[in-house]
Amino acid sequence: MKAIPDDRYTYRVTWSEDDKEYVGLCLEFPSLSWLASAPEAALRGIRSVVADAVADMRQNREAVPEPLARRAFSGKFMVRVPPEVHRCLAVEAAEAGVSLNRLATVKLAR
Image (cartoon, rainbow, N blue to C red; front, side, top):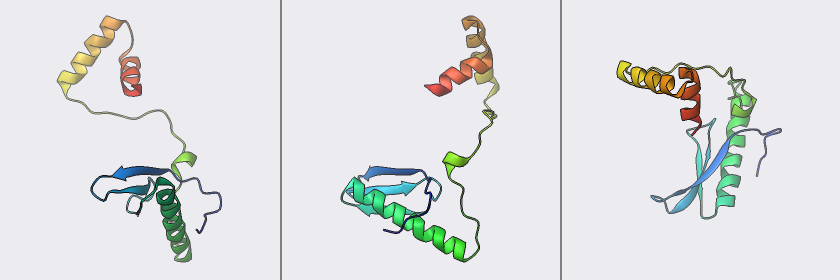
């Protein structure tokens, strides 16, 4: 297996009912996957495929995706909802005696 020095990408292994095998995925490379009969093999496979992709991208002087783990997050994002939903949430927050922001944070954390 080829390795990426300081590999910090986000990997996931899940069962594919369609393929009847485990599938290895990488969040930062959504077009890549690896099928295997065992979850450990699926992880090794996707890590190898990602290593090959990164090596190829570097060789071709293409931008390599930054690992999600290294990205900085501000803690702020905007969500657009229908006015009726906004009103219902504002009422719920007022009834609970909390800010709308606090109510949304609690609901999103569930």
